[in-house]
Image 1: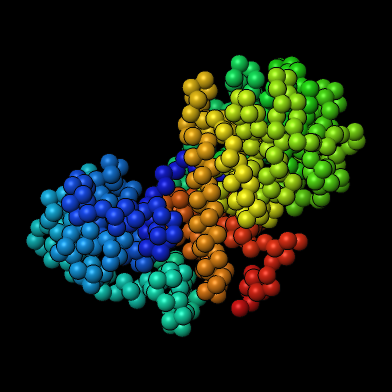
Image 2: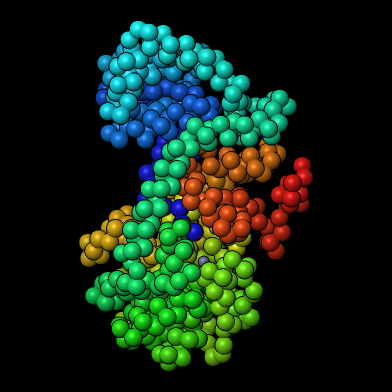
Length: 527
Ligand SMILES: [Zn+2]
Protein backbone atom coordinates (compact mmCIF):
# COMPACT_ATOMS: atom_id res chain seq x y z
CA UNK A 1 0.00 0.00 0.00
CA UNK A 2 1.22 3.49 -0.68
CA UNK A 3 1.59 6.39 1.60
CA UNK A 4 1.63 9.44 -0.63
CA UNK A 5 5.29 10.24 -1.08
CA UNK A 6 4.83 13.65 -2.58
CA UNK A 7 3.70 14.98 0.78
CA UNK A 8 5.81 17.75 2.09
CA UNK A 9 8.14 16.39 4.69
CA UNK A 10 7.37 18.77 7.53
CA UNK A 11 9.92 19.59 10.17
CA UNK A 12 10.01 17.30 13.12
CA UNK A 13 8.58 18.15 16.47
CA UNK A 14 10.45 15.92 18.86
CA UNK A 15 13.95 17.04 19.70
CA UNK A 16 15.37 13.53 19.84
CA UNK A 17 13.78 12.53 16.57
CA UNK A 18 14.85 15.76 14.96
CA UNK A 19 18.45 15.06 15.81
CA UNK A 20 18.11 11.49 14.63
CA UNK A 21 16.58 12.52 11.33
CA UNK A 22 18.91 15.44 10.93
CA UNK A 23 16.20 17.15 8.94
CA UNK A 24 15.29 19.95 11.26
CA UNK A 25 16.76 23.44 11.18
CA UNK A 26 18.31 22.43 14.53
CA UNK A 27 21.49 21.25 12.91
CA UNK A 28 21.68 24.35 10.76
CA UNK A 29 20.71 26.41 13.76
CA UNK A 30 23.60 25.23 15.86
CA UNK A 31 25.95 26.17 13.08
CA UNK A 32 24.41 29.50 12.18
CA UNK A 33 25.06 32.69 14.05
CA UNK A 34 22.52 34.91 15.74
CA UNK A 35 22.83 37.46 12.98
CA UNK A 36 22.16 34.99 10.20
CA UNK A 37 19.09 33.75 11.96
CA UNK A 38 17.82 37.21 12.76
CA UNK A 39 18.16 38.07 9.09
CA UNK A 40 15.46 35.58 8.16
CA UNK A 41 12.19 37.41 7.63
CA UNK A 42 10.21 34.79 9.56
CA UNK A 43 8.40 34.61 12.86
CA UNK A 44 10.36 32.15 14.99
CA UNK A 45 8.10 30.06 17.17
CA UNK A 46 9.76 28.30 20.11
CA UNK A 47 7.83 25.37 21.48
CA UNK A 48 8.31 22.36 23.71
CA UNK A 49 9.03 19.47 21.37
CA UNK A 50 8.24 16.94 24.14
CA UNK A 51 4.71 18.18 24.70
CA UNK A 52 1.81 16.64 22.78
CA UNK A 53 -0.23 19.84 23.11
CA UNK A 54 2.58 22.00 21.74
CA UNK A 55 3.15 19.52 18.91
CA UNK A 56 -0.55 19.57 18.04
CA UNK A 57 -0.56 23.37 17.95
CA UNK A 58 2.49 23.34 15.69
CA UNK A 59 0.62 21.05 13.26
CA UNK A 60 -2.21 23.57 13.14
CA UNK A 61 0.23 26.41 12.62
CA UNK A 62 1.89 24.60 9.71
CA UNK A 63 -1.50 24.02 8.12
CA UNK A 64 -2.46 27.68 8.41
CA UNK A 65 0.92 28.99 7.32
CA UNK A 66 0.87 28.39 3.59
CA UNK A 67 3.40 31.12 2.85
CA UNK A 68 6.01 29.89 5.30
CA UNK A 69 5.95 33.04 7.41
CA UNK A 70 6.82 31.08 10.54
CA UNK A 71 9.65 28.78 11.54
CA UNK A 72 8.88 26.36 14.36
CA UNK A 73 11.82 25.46 16.55
CA UNK A 74 11.76 22.93 19.37
CA UNK A 75 13.45 24.38 22.41
CA UNK A 76 16.97 23.25 23.14
CA UNK A 77 20.10 24.68 24.73
CA UNK A 78 21.62 25.25 21.28
CA UNK A 79 18.61 26.85 19.68
CA UNK A 80 17.71 29.53 22.23
CA UNK A 81 20.92 31.62 22.17
CA UNK A 82 21.06 31.25 18.38
CA UNK A 83 17.60 32.81 18.01
CA UNK A 84 17.79 35.59 20.60
CA UNK A 85 20.04 36.13 23.60
CA UNK A 86 17.08 37.32 25.72
CA UNK A 87 15.39 33.89 25.64
CA UNK A 88 15.65 31.87 28.85
CA UNK A 89 15.17 28.11 28.87
CA UNK A 90 12.85 28.02 31.90
CA UNK A 91 10.59 30.76 30.54
CA UNK A 92 10.40 29.14 27.12
CA UNK A 93 9.47 25.75 28.58
CA UNK A 94 6.71 27.41 30.58
CA UNK A 95 5.09 29.50 27.83
CA UNK A 96 5.07 29.94 24.06
CA UNK A 97 7.64 32.47 22.82
CA UNK A 98 7.52 34.10 19.38
CA UNK A 99 10.33 36.28 18.02
CA UNK A 100 9.16 38.58 15.21
CA UNK A 101 11.27 39.56 12.20
CA UNK A 102 11.73 42.92 13.98
CA UNK A 103 13.17 41.00 16.95
CA UNK A 104 10.26 41.73 19.27
CA UNK A 105 9.60 38.89 21.71
CA UNK A 106 5.96 37.95 22.40
CA UNK A 107 5.12 35.62 25.24
CA UNK A 108 2.15 33.37 26.13
CA UNK A 109 -1.29 34.58 25.01
CA UNK A 110 0.27 37.61 23.30
CA UNK A 111 2.38 35.23 21.23
CA UNK A 112 -0.79 33.32 20.25
CA UNK A 113 -2.59 36.49 19.08
CA UNK A 114 0.55 37.66 17.29
CA UNK A 115 0.55 34.42 15.25
CA UNK A 116 -3.23 34.51 14.75
CA UNK A 117 -2.97 37.94 13.09
CA UNK A 118 -0.70 36.46 10.39
CA UNK A 119 -3.38 34.38 8.69
CA UNK A 120 -6.70 35.54 7.14
CA UNK A 121 -8.78 32.77 8.75
CA UNK A 122 -7.57 33.59 12.27
CA UNK A 123 -6.85 37.30 11.88
CA UNK A 124 -10.00 38.38 13.71
CA UNK A 125 -9.16 36.23 16.74
CA UNK A 126 -5.73 37.85 16.80
CA UNK A 127 -7.12 41.37 16.73
CA UNK A 128 -10.02 40.86 19.15
CA UNK A 129 -7.80 38.80 21.46
CA UNK A 130 -5.65 41.85 22.05
CA UNK A 131 -8.59 43.96 23.33
CA UNK A 132 -10.16 44.19 26.79
CA UNK A 133 -11.72 41.99 28.13
CA UNK A 134 -10.80 39.21 25.65
CA UNK A 135 -7.11 39.66 26.29
CA UNK A 136 -7.60 39.06 30.03
CA UNK A 137 -9.80 36.01 29.44
CA UNK A 138 -7.30 34.65 26.90
CA UNK A 139 -4.42 35.12 29.32
CA UNK A 140 -6.37 33.30 32.03
CA UNK A 141 -7.17 30.28 29.83
CA UNK A 142 -3.67 30.21 28.39
CA UNK A 143 -2.20 30.30 31.89
CA UNK A 144 -4.35 27.36 32.97
CA UNK A 145 -3.34 25.15 30.01
CA UNK A 146 0.32 26.18 30.29
CA UNK A 147 0.57 25.22 33.95
CA UNK A 148 -1.34 21.98 33.52
CA UNK A 149 -0.03 20.70 30.22
CA UNK A 150 2.69 18.62 31.85
CA UNK A 151 0.15 16.68 33.82
CA UNK A 152 -2.09 16.48 30.74
CA UNK A 153 0.67 15.28 28.50
CA UNK A 154 3.76 13.81 30.01
CA UNK A 155 6.05 12.14 27.57
CA UNK A 156 4.17 9.41 25.75
CA UNK A 157 4.97 6.93 28.47
CA UNK A 158 8.65 7.18 27.72
CA UNK A 159 8.48 7.21 23.93
CA UNK A 160 10.45 10.43 24.04
CA UNK A 161 13.75 9.32 25.39
CA UNK A 162 14.89 12.75 26.51
CA UNK A 163 12.98 12.52 29.75
CA UNK A 164 14.72 9.54 31.35
CA UNK A 165 12.52 6.61 30.35
CA UNK A 166 13.24 4.75 33.59
CA UNK A 167 11.82 7.55 35.71
CA UNK A 168 8.91 8.15 33.39
CA UNK A 169 8.01 4.47 33.26
CA UNK A 170 8.01 4.29 37.01
CA UNK A 171 5.61 7.20 37.25
CA UNK A 172 3.34 6.58 34.32
CA UNK A 173 1.91 3.33 33.05
CA UNK A 174 0.45 2.56 29.66
CA UNK A 175 -2.65 4.48 30.60
CA UNK A 176 -0.62 7.68 30.66
CA UNK A 177 0.87 6.79 27.32
CA UNK A 178 -2.55 6.31 25.82
CA UNK A 179 -3.96 9.46 27.39
CA UNK A 180 -1.07 11.53 26.00
CA UNK A 181 -1.08 9.96 22.58
CA UNK A 182 -4.86 10.11 22.39
CA UNK A 183 -4.94 13.72 23.55
CA UNK A 184 -2.46 14.64 20.83
CA UNK A 185 -4.64 12.75 18.38
CA UNK A 186 -7.88 14.52 19.32
CA UNK A 187 -6.40 18.01 19.09
CA UNK A 188 -5.30 17.02 15.61
CA UNK A 189 -8.41 15.05 14.64
CA UNK A 190 -9.95 17.75 12.41
CA UNK A 191 -6.63 17.95 10.54
CA UNK A 192 -6.45 14.16 10.27
CA UNK A 193 -9.98 13.97 8.86
CA UNK A 194 -9.43 16.83 6.49
CA UNK A 195 -6.19 15.27 5.20
CA UNK A 196 -8.07 11.97 4.79
CA UNK A 197 -10.84 13.59 2.78
CA UNK A 198 -8.39 15.49 0.58
CA UNK A 199 -6.34 12.35 -0.08
CA UNK A 200 -9.57 10.48 -0.92
CA UNK A 201 -10.55 13.12 -3.47
CA UNK A 202 -7.08 12.99 -5.00
CA UNK A 203 -7.20 9.20 -5.26
CA UNK A 204 -10.62 9.30 -6.92
CA UNK A 205 -9.38 11.81 -9.46
CA UNK A 206 -6.29 9.73 -10.35
CA UNK A 207 -8.42 6.59 -10.53
CA UNK A 208 -10.89 8.23 -12.91
CA UNK A 209 -8.11 9.52 -15.17
CA UNK A 210 -6.41 6.11 -15.38
CA UNK A 211 -9.52 3.94 -15.64
CA UNK A 212 -8.93 1.47 -18.52
CA UNK A 213 -6.23 3.83 -19.83
CA UNK A 214 -2.72 3.20 -21.02
CA UNK A 215 0.29 5.46 -21.10
CA UNK A 216 2.69 5.22 -24.07
CA UNK A 217 6.14 6.60 -23.30
CA UNK A 218 9.63 6.71 -24.86
CA UNK A 219 8.22 6.34 -28.39
CA UNK A 220 6.36 3.18 -27.50
CA UNK A 221 9.31 1.47 -25.78
CA UNK A 222 7.58 1.83 -22.41
CA UNK A 223 3.84 1.35 -21.98
CA UNK A 224 1.91 1.35 -18.73
CA UNK A 225 -1.38 -0.53 -18.87
CA UNK A 226 -3.72 0.42 -16.05
CA UNK A 227 -5.64 -2.65 -14.94
CA UNK A 228 -9.12 -2.62 -13.45
CA UNK A 229 -11.61 -5.04 -12.08
CA UNK A 230 -14.79 -4.70 -10.07
CA UNK A 231 -13.37 -5.58 -6.65
CA UNK A 232 -9.74 -4.68 -7.37
CA UNK A 233 -10.96 -1.11 -8.06
CA UNK A 234 -11.58 -0.63 -4.34
CA UNK A 235 -7.81 -0.64 -3.76
CA UNK A 236 -6.90 2.44 -5.84
CA UNK A 237 -9.99 4.23 -4.52
CA UNK A 238 -9.33 3.51 -0.86
CA UNK A 239 -5.55 3.33 -0.76
CA UNK A 240 -4.19 4.98 -3.90
CA UNK A 241 -2.32 1.92 -5.14
CA UNK A 242 -2.98 1.57 -8.88
CA UNK A 243 -2.77 -1.78 -10.63
CA UNK A 244 -0.63 -1.88 -13.74
CA UNK A 245 1.13 -4.13 -16.19
CA UNK A 246 4.30 -2.66 -17.68
CA UNK A 247 5.39 -3.32 -21.27
CA UNK A 248 9.04 -2.54 -21.88
CA UNK A 249 11.00 -3.28 -25.01
CA UNK A 250 8.96 -6.38 -25.90
CA UNK A 251 8.74 -7.65 -22.32
CA UNK A 252 5.49 -7.76 -20.37
CA UNK A 253 6.12 -7.26 -16.65
CA UNK A 254 3.71 -8.21 -13.83
CA UNK A 255 0.51 -8.79 -15.82
CA UNK A 256 -1.98 -8.52 -12.96
CA UNK A 257 -4.29 -10.88 -11.08
CA UNK A 258 -7.10 -13.14 -12.36
CA UNK A 259 -9.66 -10.51 -11.38
CA UNK A 260 -7.95 -8.02 -13.75
CA UNK A 261 -7.78 -10.47 -16.65
CA UNK A 262 -10.63 -8.95 -18.68
CA UNK A 263 -9.05 -5.54 -18.38
CA UNK A 264 -5.69 -6.94 -19.56
CA UNK A 265 -7.39 -8.80 -22.42
CA UNK A 266 -9.05 -5.57 -23.58
CA UNK A 267 -5.66 -3.77 -23.62
CA UNK A 268 -4.02 -6.59 -25.58
CA UNK A 269 -6.91 -6.64 -28.09
CA UNK A 270 -6.64 -2.90 -28.72
CA UNK A 271 -2.89 -2.47 -28.64
CA UNK A 272 -1.80 -5.78 -30.22
CA UNK A 273 1.62 -5.42 -28.58
CA UNK A 274 4.46 -7.66 -29.72
CA UNK A 275 5.19 -9.42 -26.45
CA UNK A 276 8.27 -11.65 -26.62
CA UNK A 277 8.71 -12.37 -22.91
CA UNK A 278 6.67 -12.30 -19.75
CA UNK A 279 8.32 -11.56 -16.41
CA UNK A 280 7.13 -11.35 -12.79
CA UNK A 281 9.13 -9.22 -10.36
CA UNK A 282 7.85 -11.21 -7.38
CA UNK A 283 5.18 -13.65 -6.32
CA UNK A 284 2.50 -11.31 -4.96
CA UNK A 285 -1.00 -12.03 -6.19
CA UNK A 286 -1.56 -8.81 -8.14
CA UNK A 287 1.61 -9.46 -10.19
CA UNK A 288 1.46 -13.14 -11.10
CA UNK A 289 -2.17 -14.13 -11.70
CA UNK A 290 -2.01 -14.02 -15.51
CA UNK A 291 1.47 -15.32 -16.32
CA UNK A 292 0.39 -18.57 -18.00
CA UNK A 293 -2.76 -17.02 -19.42
CA UNK A 294 -0.82 -14.28 -21.21
CA UNK A 295 1.78 -16.79 -22.31
CA UNK A 296 -0.94 -18.98 -23.87
CA UNK A 297 -2.43 -15.93 -25.59
CA UNK A 298 0.81 -14.51 -27.03
CA UNK A 299 3.09 -17.53 -27.24
CA UNK A 300 5.72 -15.63 -25.23
CA UNK A 301 7.62 -17.63 -22.61
CA UNK A 302 7.35 -16.86 -18.89
CA UNK A 303 10.52 -15.86 -17.00
CA UNK A 304 10.64 -15.82 -13.20
CA UNK A 305 13.38 -16.06 -10.59
CA UNK A 306 14.04 -19.46 -9.05
CA UNK A 307 12.59 -18.34 -5.73
CA UNK A 308 9.49 -16.84 -7.32
CA UNK A 309 8.91 -20.13 -9.15
CA UNK A 310 9.14 -21.91 -5.82
CA UNK A 311 6.53 -19.58 -4.30
CA UNK A 312 4.23 -20.11 -7.28
CA UNK A 313 4.33 -23.92 -7.28
CA UNK A 314 2.02 -24.27 -5.55
CA UNK A 315 0.79 -20.76 -4.75
CA UNK A 316 0.02 -20.52 -1.04
CA UNK A 317 -3.58 -19.98 -0.01
CA UNK A 318 -4.14 -16.24 0.42
CA UNK A 319 -5.88 -14.69 3.44
CA UNK A 320 -9.54 -14.52 2.44
CA UNK A 321 -9.69 -10.69 2.19
CA UNK A 322 -6.86 -10.64 -0.34
CA UNK A 323 -8.30 -13.61 -2.21
CA UNK A 324 -11.71 -11.96 -2.36
CA UNK A 325 -10.49 -8.55 -3.57
CA UNK A 326 -7.43 -9.33 -5.71
CA UNK A 327 -8.03 -12.98 -6.53
CA UNK A 328 -6.19 -16.22 -5.77
CA UNK A 329 -3.65 -16.78 -8.59
CA UNK A 330 -3.38 -20.23 -10.20
CA UNK A 331 -0.19 -22.24 -9.72
CA UNK A 332 2.59 -21.62 -12.23
CA UNK A 333 2.62 -24.23 -14.99
CA UNK A 334 5.58 -25.59 -16.94
CA UNK A 335 7.27 -24.62 -19.17
CA UNK A 336 8.87 -21.47 -17.79
CA UNK A 337 12.40 -20.13 -17.72
CA UNK A 338 14.46 -19.15 -14.70
CA UNK A 339 15.80 -15.61 -14.86
CA UNK A 340 19.57 -15.16 -15.12
CA UNK A 341 21.65 -12.02 -14.63
CA UNK A 342 20.48 -10.41 -17.85
CA UNK A 343 17.38 -10.56 -19.97
CA UNK A 344 17.37 -9.59 -23.64
CA UNK A 345 14.84 -6.99 -24.74
CA UNK A 346 14.13 -5.98 -28.35
CA UNK A 347 16.77 -3.25 -28.39
CA UNK A 348 19.21 -4.23 -25.68
CA UNK A 349 19.91 -6.21 -22.52
CA UNK A 350 18.25 -5.59 -19.17
CA UNK A 351 20.05 -6.33 -15.93
CA UNK A 352 18.16 -8.54 -13.49
CA UNK A 353 18.94 -7.42 -9.93
CA UNK A 354 17.84 -9.26 -6.80
CA UNK A 355 16.19 -6.79 -4.41
CA UNK A 356 14.80 -8.64 -1.38
CA UNK A 357 12.95 -6.56 1.19
CA UNK A 358 9.41 -6.05 -0.06
CA UNK A 359 9.52 -9.85 -0.15
CA UNK A 360 12.40 -12.31 -0.37
CA UNK A 361 12.07 -13.19 -4.07
CA UNK A 362 11.88 -9.65 -5.46
CA UNK A 363 13.89 -8.72 -8.57
CA UNK A 364 14.05 -5.48 -10.56
CA UNK A 365 14.94 -4.91 -14.21
CA UNK A 366 17.39 -2.18 -15.15
CA UNK A 367 18.14 -0.78 -18.60
CA UNK A 368 21.58 0.85 -18.37
CA UNK A 369 21.31 2.34 -21.87
CA UNK A 370 18.06 4.20 -21.28
CA UNK A 371 18.70 4.54 -17.49
CA UNK A 372 15.30 3.08 -16.72
CA UNK A 373 14.62 1.10 -13.56
CA UNK A 374 11.54 -1.12 -13.61
CA UNK A 375 11.24 -1.40 -9.87
CA UNK A 376 8.13 -3.50 -9.30
CA UNK A 377 7.37 -3.12 -5.60
CA UNK A 378 11.00 -2.59 -4.60
CA UNK A 379 10.20 1.10 -4.28
CA UNK A 380 6.73 2.04 -3.10
CA UNK A 381 6.94 5.73 -2.36
CA UNK A 382 9.33 7.21 0.15
CA UNK A 383 6.98 6.86 3.13
CA UNK A 384 5.42 3.46 2.67
CA UNK A 385 4.07 2.79 6.17
CA UNK A 386 1.68 -0.17 5.98
CA UNK A 387 3.58 -3.22 4.78
CA UNK A 388 2.34 -6.80 4.87
CA UNK A 389 4.06 -9.58 6.82
CA UNK A 390 6.37 -10.44 3.89
CA UNK A 391 8.32 -7.22 4.27
CA UNK A 392 11.80 -7.35 5.77
CA UNK A 393 12.88 -3.74 6.13
CA UNK A 394 16.50 -4.57 6.95
CA UNK A 395 16.89 -6.46 3.68
CA UNK A 396 15.01 -3.66 1.93
CA UNK A 397 17.59 -1.15 3.18
CA UNK A 398 20.44 -3.18 1.67
CA UNK A 399 18.55 -3.51 -1.64
CA UNK A 400 17.91 0.22 -1.83
CA UNK A 401 21.58 0.91 -1.13
CA UNK A 402 22.37 -1.33 -4.09
CA UNK A 403 19.92 0.58 -6.32
CA UNK A 404 21.57 3.86 -5.28
CA UNK A 405 24.68 2.70 -7.16
CA UNK A 406 22.78 2.70 -10.47
CA UNK A 407 22.42 5.66 -12.77
CA UNK A 408 18.62 6.07 -12.89
CA UNK A 409 16.68 8.68 -14.81
CA UNK A 410 13.28 6.99 -14.91
CA UNK A 411 11.95 4.91 -12.05
CA UNK A 412 8.79 2.95 -12.85
CA UNK A 413 6.98 1.56 -9.82
CA UNK A 414 4.82 -1.54 -10.01
CA UNK A 415 1.77 0.39 -8.78
CA UNK A 416 1.48 3.19 -11.25
CA UNK A 417 3.96 5.87 -10.23
CA UNK A 418 6.83 7.11 -12.35
CA UNK A 419 9.57 9.25 -10.84
CA UNK A 420 11.53 11.26 -13.35
CA UNK A 421 12.77 14.71 -14.27
CA UNK A 422 13.14 13.82 -17.92
CA UNK A 423 11.35 16.13 -20.31
CA UNK A 424 10.52 13.35 -22.81
CA UNK A 425 8.15 11.88 -20.21
CA UNK A 426 5.01 14.05 -20.38
CA UNK A 427 3.16 15.29 -17.31
CA UNK A 428 0.46 13.06 -15.89
CA UNK A 429 -0.54 14.37 -12.46
CA UNK A 430 -0.82 11.65 -9.85
CA UNK A 431 1.16 9.20 -11.98
CA UNK A 432 4.28 11.03 -13.17
CA UNK A 433 6.06 12.51 -10.16
CA UNK A 434 8.60 15.18 -11.01
CA UNK A 435 11.33 14.07 -8.70
CA UNK A 436 14.86 12.80 -9.25
CA UNK A 437 14.55 9.00 -8.83
CA UNK A 438 17.78 8.83 -6.85
CA UNK A 439 16.54 11.56 -4.52
CA UNK A 440 13.33 9.58 -3.99
CA UNK A 441 15.28 6.41 -3.17
CA UNK A 442 17.62 8.29 -0.90
CA UNK A 443 14.64 9.81 0.92
CA UNK A 444 13.24 6.35 1.46
CA UNK A 445 16.61 5.16 2.72
CA UNK A 446 16.73 8.03 5.22
CA UNK A 447 13.23 7.19 6.41
CA UNK A 448 14.02 3.48 6.83
CA UNK A 449 17.28 4.25 8.65
CA UNK A 450 15.48 6.61 11.00
CA UNK A 451 12.82 3.96 11.66
CA UNK A 452 15.52 1.39 12.34
CA UNK A 453 17.08 3.71 14.92
CA UNK A 454 13.75 4.43 16.60
CA UNK A 455 12.87 0.75 16.80
CA UNK A 456 16.29 -0.42 17.98
CA UNK A 457 16.41 2.25 20.67
CA UNK A 458 12.86 1.41 21.69
CA UNK A 459 13.70 -2.25 22.20
CA UNK A 460 16.89 -1.30 24.01
CA UNK A 461 14.86 0.83 26.41
CA UNK A 462 12.44 -2.10 26.72
CA UNK A 463 9.49 0.03 25.71
CA UNK A 464 6.25 -1.80 24.95
CA UNK A 465 5.77 -2.45 21.24
CA UNK A 466 2.76 -0.16 21.07
CA UNK A 467 4.89 2.71 22.37
CA UNK A 468 7.63 1.92 19.85
CA UNK A 469 5.02 2.04 17.10
CA UNK A 470 3.82 5.41 18.40
CA UNK A 471 7.37 6.75 18.47
CA UNK A 472 7.69 5.80 14.78
CA UNK A 473 4.64 7.94 14.03
CA UNK A 474 4.98 10.98 16.30
CA UNK A 475 2.09 13.37 15.76
CA UNK A 476 4.53 16.20 15.27
CA UNK A 477 5.58 14.59 12.01
CA UNK A 478 3.39 15.67 9.19
CA UNK A 479 3.40 12.35 7.34
CA UNK A 480 2.20 10.62 10.55
CA UNK A 481 -1.11 12.42 10.81
CA UNK A 482 -1.64 13.14 7.12
CA UNK A 483 -1.59 9.43 6.27
CA UNK A 484 -3.20 8.37 9.56
CA UNK A 485 -6.77 8.06 8.24
CA UNK A 486 -5.66 6.02 5.20
CA UNK A 487 -3.26 3.83 7.19
CA UNK A 488 -5.83 2.95 9.82
CA UNK A 489 -8.43 2.31 7.13
CA UNK A 490 -5.99 -0.12 5.49
CA UNK A 491 -5.40 -1.84 8.85
CA UNK A 492 -9.11 -2.22 9.41
CA UNK A 493 -10.05 -3.46 5.95
CA UNK A 494 -7.13 -5.88 5.67
CA UNK A 495 -7.92 -7.19 9.17
CA UNK A 496 -4.51 -6.07 10.38
CA UNK A 497 -2.66 -7.74 7.54
CA UNK A 498 -1.27 -4.45 6.23
CA UNK A 499 -0.53 -2.07 9.08
CA UNK A 500 1.82 0.29 10.86
CA UNK A 501 2.40 -2.49 13.40
CA UNK A 502 3.77 -4.63 10.59
CA UNK A 503 6.23 -1.85 9.85
CA UNK A 504 7.73 -2.23 13.33
CA UNK A 505 7.65 -5.99 12.95
CA UNK A 506 9.42 -5.76 9.59
CA UNK A 507 12.54 -4.53 11.42
CA UNK A 508 12.68 -7.26 14.03
CA UNK A 509 12.16 -10.18 11.70
CA UNK A 510 14.82 -12.81 12.14
CA UNK A 511 15.85 -15.40 9.56
CA UNK A 512 13.22 -18.08 9.43
CA UNK A 513 10.51 -15.53 10.14
CA UNK A 514 10.75 -15.93 13.90
CA UNK A 515 9.98 -12.95 16.06
CA UNK A 516 11.98 -12.53 19.26
CA UNK A 517 10.09 -14.25 22.05
CA UNK A 518 9.62 -11.09 24.08
CA UNK A 519 8.04 -9.44 21.07
CA UNK A 520 5.58 -12.26 20.45
CA UNK A 521 4.50 -12.18 24.06
CA UNK A 522 3.81 -8.46 23.88
CA UNK A 523 1.95 -8.73 20.61
CA UNK A 524 -0.41 -11.19 22.18
CA UNK A 525 -1.10 -8.80 25.04
CA UNK A 526 1.27 -10.08 27.73
CA UNK A 527 3.90 -7.89 29.34
ZN1 LIG B 1 4.17 -6.81 -3.85
